[in-house]
Image (cartoon, rainbow, N blue to C red):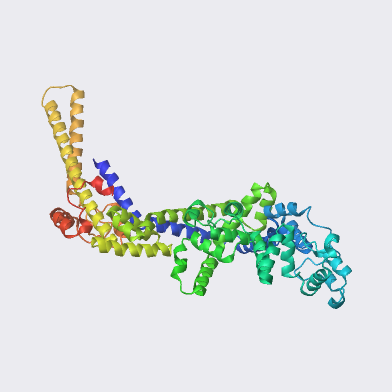
Length: 569
């Protein structure tokens, strides 16, 4: 019986701890580990590496998909190839791009620039005197693959347009937009559609048709967007995952994100910031209907983005190293890790902690978030609401959304049951302590009675032996029985005279009779234990029925509950 009660006491202690501390302690431990180890990793070096890698990707990734390479000028292809080749040894994406471009790049044009500025060779003749031959020569050197105005079968049909195109290119560094779109429509076999629109709607109809054909070729399907996201999304991006797709059924934002990625080599900044806020558990804060001013929302997103820089850097560099390993670049990955003054095992340990932290927070959110809906709250029983409030309160120190949820659930609990969830829990735990104390005292009395009964039996047997003729061995056994009886009497007397467990002893937490779990509960409880055990037991015994009727929040705490039932709540 005593061992069983010890287990119950330990369980009560566990309940007290978990009610308010477990989740927040987890968050604090993770935050402390990150803070302690951050000084041992080269955060700035990793950040520079990621930024330069992404700059290079913005040059070559846009030319990797669809017809983008066909639209590109030789200079753009040359620039993309140089960036891919420079990073091919340190980035699997760049290695794949370098192989993709290998057979597409023409022999570089002498004097052609690979930068953003037009080639100096373009200024060899004044615009006013450009000849057909000069226009053809420029087109042969710099036209994208789909541009065929300068080829022999079309050249004589519209000399003026060809010269005008390359005069514009010489002055502005790019071909006229309408000519580019017209050539693209021819290349993909949709020029008849443009001509029909021109007949029906004049110049405006023609321009609209050209824009429509140009844009249609760049639109991603849902399947294409999901595939790209699965292969290239950062660790914190989740719009392509099943849970997100179940909410955003039209996938418009997902397709927009990855269309932008395909065209620019990176996701839109605002999408990355929104996904980071969601990963950090702050998605609810940035629902657009909660903001009157877009600039304020953008500033708040930027702040969350900046605050997460180090954590995000850890996630991205570990993901990059893992992709290098998957691509067979093990030696280079190890060298890169050394260059960044990090330790890949340590980094992975940190990211594992971060991932677990977010998983635990998501699990807590799954517990309390559904009850924020008034209908769901009203349909839930008291135990379910209490569990939800405990999860929200436990994470409040780490998650503003959890803090807001805890406050809302607290108010709803007060309105529905007439008491705060914390008061209910403390009162409920007090009743559990009362039941535990009663059972402990009953067990102690039973142990005392059993010891004394055994002592009386031993003493009676010994006295009978000593009062009659017996062997020396039997007399020795009788003496041992008397010694055992005296020990049992002493133990029973000590137990009977021991100071009772008193939870009101705040002056000296280490007074005789204060158990370890009582001491810990007093230290950790926000309210503390202010009544003596005897007063508490009397209140528990005499007022149970009255409390059940007067306070709905306490209706389940009647005197007849067993200790096991209490601890199982």
